[in-house]
View 1 (cartoon, rainbow, N blue to C red):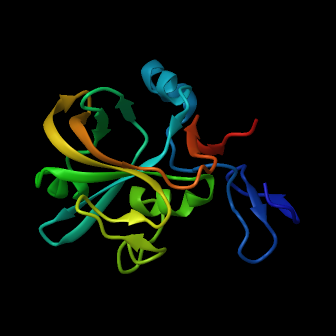
View 2 (view 1 turned 90 degrees about the vertical axis):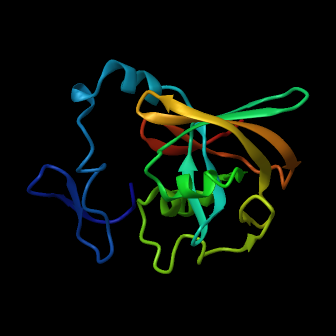
Length: 189
């Protein structure tokens, strides 16, 4: 919580008495934990690294925040992920190539912009510094992979993307941004 004066609001949440302060303890639109399925609650207890998948769609670069990404080492290295087939990213994935950038602890706003949780006037690529690659734009200095789509199929309420890693670039070794129990977290030793 932010430091400052606060009072109890009409909804039972805390309301800041200072301009620009917070008005709720959590997301007022989130499904109450007791009403969530046990599987959703299980998934929430698995810490997941946050990535941004980007590609070039028919109308320019597109991207999506993805926390369900798995990398399998091998010859060739492979990458799996679950994405929303109704997202703008899907148009870019149909071209067959995409980039996956690992987000650092300081990239919370990047994650929220690409997840559609934060306003992004002019699009999510307008803020920050981006490098154009043959797979999709990536944040300057990020660790990222350039991937070729091998296949997709429905998987639960998502689309499973199977890909081959063609390029892997290591950026600075920064603490990753992690999602755990509905919130961003950072790792500490």
